[in-house]
Length: 403
Image 1 (cartoon, helix red, strand yellow):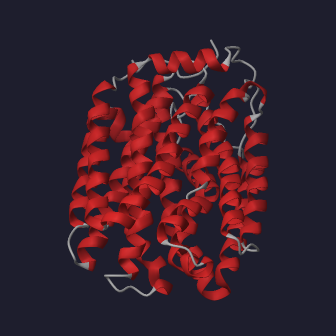
Image 2 (image 1 turned 90 degrees about the vertical axis):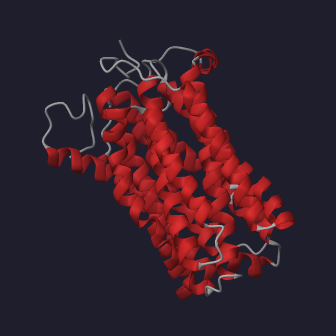
């Protein structure tokens, strides 16, 4: 039975909603496991490639360069891309650079393979979000996006655990080969469970005109900037905390993957984001989620493993909840060319990740962990200021691109 969502949540049985959400989350997990799984390998990669933490942090997060470019490219050519076919082909192609990462011992080659991974990850991500936006009504959009972000959360937890365990058993190459196999599984799920539909060419608006129109909307413009802030904060925390965990806090690098059980609370809270946002609106939900993340940043200043782990859990839960609110807002608010809107959001989002890896790597190397956390907190405060521009669309407003 294929995943189809016309007028989703309208007259459906609860088990159908759960089943659809599970499929959406599984595809998200198998798309984004490469993005986050490699972060669990950072201390080992620094040793294997004999480079400093900042250099390896940029190399591991170089996928965000490809993701930023790919989000716009998919939006540009979206009128010509079949959503289902584009999704499964992107996931199949993703397995190739992932496999090759297990064969290289050159950090420059590693960097460019991560960029190529980012191209295919973002293509799959953008096409899935566009598929959901085009097939969901306003009521269903928040829930569908929350399900996708829940899969993102799972990739952070179980992806890191799986990657760390694979590296422990088979070495770093084995970890990348495991991820490549999971990418192929994602392609298979897309082939079997994602339904086709015929509205691919319904959007006749030129991409530049669509981008200009979206950027002219204050709420959407704020949401795109918030996307930048969210991955800036997330990458900054969860890239460089690894070095604090295995350094001052004394965790064995082989046990680092277990630390990421801190994402477990987010797996249970993120699915609630859709319902919560529909009830209260994206703006207050984003503020509340940011407050949770801000509290976590404060806890991570304390020289205590328990405090740092609790802080990581709060930052993870807060940023994922905020991301679900932001992506759902874009899906509900864009009334034309959803691929263009999603492409802009994801490009801003992944540029934020790249900036977080590069700029905060310099801050961490030069000034240490407390100053890095202060910079991250300032970025989160900027996101809260941007959220003042987010206004909710009418509940009756359709999100589809067709009349």
